[in-house]
Length: 166
Image (cartoon, rainbow, N blue to C red; front, top):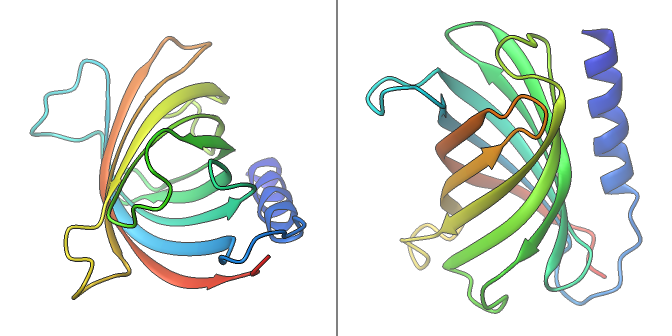
């Protein structure tokens, strides 16, 4: 657990320290909740429900460093992920995006989430952009390179902070 905590603190600190070069805010912090499924799961019963904190640092209009810290409510675990995401859709669109990425996953319970690299596909949708501009619905599918385990995450994120204008 100490190794996991130290790695996540290092990841988050390095994201905050990134040089900034654009006019838009490059750092965004979100709080949220999601359901998490692993391969073989029935869609009606997630592996767990999680609370989350996610940090995104835009390195360019199409490239972001991403990280997340998650707490599993039912099984009382902590997991984290950090990596890169490439926006595959129009970066000017504030209401919908698709990203392709890869993240390294850490977990306090290796049986729940092995420590490994996992490529992923993510979708973000802000359906109420005029009334709730900070609320985003998210979905993500990933594939663990070592475990060969497929995962799916569906959740909601609320932007808590933005900063670091480049």
